[in-house]
Image 1: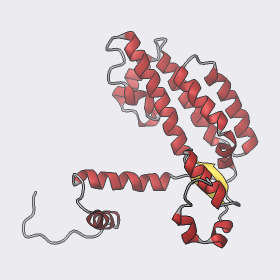
Image 2 (image 1 turned 90 degrees about the horizontal axis):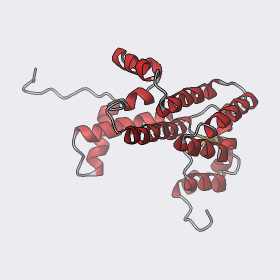
Image 3 (image 1 turned 135 degrees about the vertical axis):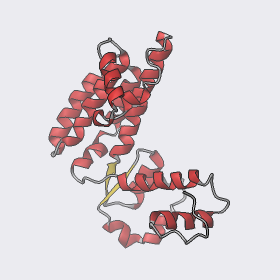
Image 4 (image 1 turned 90 degrees about the vertical axis):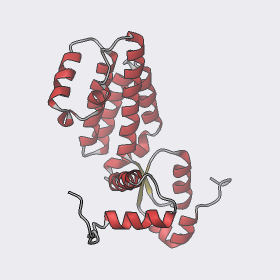
Length: 220
C-alpha cells in the first residue's frame, strides 16, 4: 500500500477516528484489504458473506457451462437459475425440473450439493465450530473433481482467517448491496442520466419515497 496514494476518505475521517474503528466489512479485493490494514490499525477485517457467496455461485455456474458444452444437448438448457437459487425460492416448475435432474449423475448436481452444504457454514455461532465445519467442507470441495469448485475452496482457504472473523463480529454489506442494486435499477429505468447531479436527484427522489407531482393527465 506504500506505493499507492492514501485514499482521501481516511484523511477525512482523521487519525483518531481511524484508530477508533473496531471492524470493517469489505470484499476480498487486495487494494481494499491493503488500505484497511494500513489505515485502520485496530479494525477487525471481515470479508463480506454475500461477496463470498457470489464467488461460489459463479463457480457452480462455470461447472454448468462446462458440462453443457461437454454433453452437447438441451439437457441443461435454461437451468441456470435452478442451480443458483435458494431451494425455497424455486418455482414449482423449477422444483420439478431439479428433482428430475437430481436423478442423473451430473457434475453440476454435485456442485449444487456442495453449494447448499456451504450455506450451512453461516449458521454456526462460534468461530471454532465454524472452522471445523469449513475444514470438512474444504475436503469435500477439493476432492470433488470439479475444478471451479476446487478453485473457490482454495480461495476460501487463503482468506480463511478474515472469513472466520464474521463469527466474532456479524457484519456484512447486505444493506449497501441492496442500495447499489436499487441505484442500478433507477439508472436502467431511465436508460442512464446525462449528468451526475440529475442522477443524484433521481436517487434522492426514488429512495426517499417522495410523493409524485400532480400531473395534468393521468395514464391508466
